[in-house]
Length: 303
Image 1 (cartoon, rainbow, N blue to C red):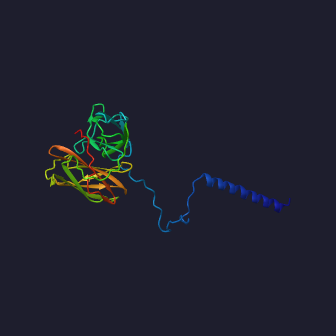
Image 2: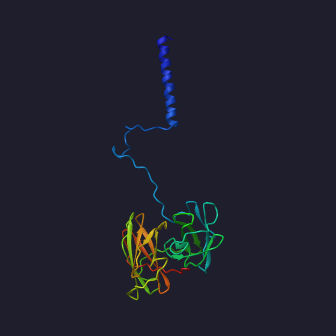
Image 3: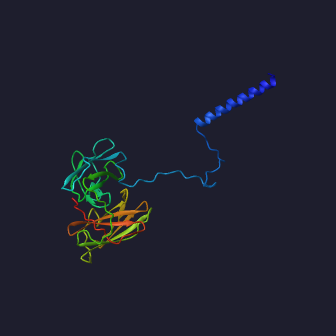
């Protein structure tokens, strides 16, 4: 083979070797996109892509958060009679939490509701020295239920809402939650005004009457003249509802609800009058709110 031919083959061989080496490095190592790279389809040249940020998870969807875990002692309740519902809050150190910060006059609020948004109960368990919370509870109908523990550990600056599923054996007949005019116990009627707007604080005004007359002597309950719980239909996300501070004892109670998405919601109002706590339930959507309570009665409060 002549010398020029040999040199040509040698140069070609080097190019192939270096090209293969660069290709391996491109596949195995990180790449830096040049500043002049073309934008992806649909992306403007003068607008940088926004980094993806994870939205805040609504309360009650997780059984553990920030190192704390809700641990149910048993995962069944009964319609036959009262049965203790017991649980512990396990802390980041793996031990039951025994120190809490009192909020709304209680160390812990427990919400129990069936997954079709019926059978709502708001109760307050008793804490044992070993960190075991317990409350006698009876439910009216079988089906899948969700338990929410709303509390603030003494060792933490912010409160937590942890959730867990619990079952009630029997024939489950889900409800479609039609609006009803029935009040909490046949004596009281509550009307609701306001619209839920996703992504903002929505004003809700509830007006209480008894025997057709406005109630103007409501009694404080949990540090206010009313307590409102909002649950999202479908996943039962437990939403933040803030009462408006007021010295007026009725007939109106004002709350501000923050809903993260469009859809349906269950709203559950507790209020106290003449020494008794009453519960009235509403169904609401982000397109508007049904003007009458659905009439779900609370089996008991356990206060």
